[in-house]
Image (tube, rainbow, N blue to C red; front, side, top):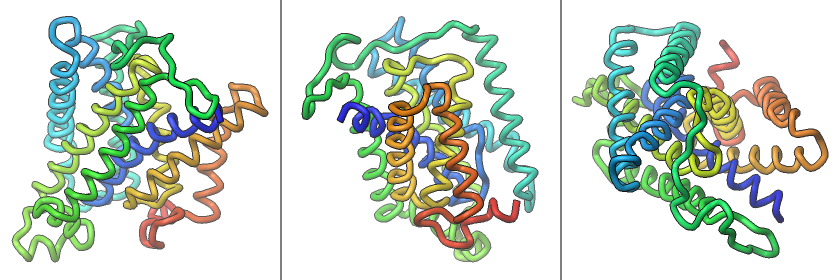
Length: 290
């Protein structure tokens, strides 16, 4: 039970990162490998602000600032590219990721930081079926569930969400219907950055935050997005939880150093056996072409 709860916790983090990948992919077809840096920025900015303002306000402001960073990335790097190829966008987003990471290194140095626990402290624990977990885990799980519910309502009930789905289905047809496709791309980058920043704030008390912590989370989130099927938020959640549980179980039988190798091996198997993922369409398996 302890391994299972641990796997569900880390898996929910991967699921949130995967959802960020899917938000941008659904609207633009772009795989944004800078998604992990949004988590890092959210955590680092909120930690800096927490020393001068209450924690909830610091988190809200960190999410807003990171969303503005997402807007700047779309404005400066993505908007001017017409008919981008998969390879070109992969190289560009990796370059953006490195740029953000280097800026963060100069701003915050290499020191490891963390937000205070939202409830209790590092020694406070809750017993569930004999397993002991931190109350912060409940915050992580609750945040993941809230994001999924709100995104489903956003895409299914709001005009803006339906417009973004229309761009995902057929960008040219959406434009002919009067939808500003460029604006939808901007919104998708801002929304993805905001969700990533919120996740970075929630996990910071447990995982701690450093300038380069986004890279490994991006790899795990990308694996979850591929596993669940690019474009499927529900698939991303299920896949993220599965990957978290698989990692937790692997720790019980293999040395901790092999945890990342297990995830990368799983990613390679998915790309070879089923590039479209568990819940994705065959068209979504674009990385097979790449």
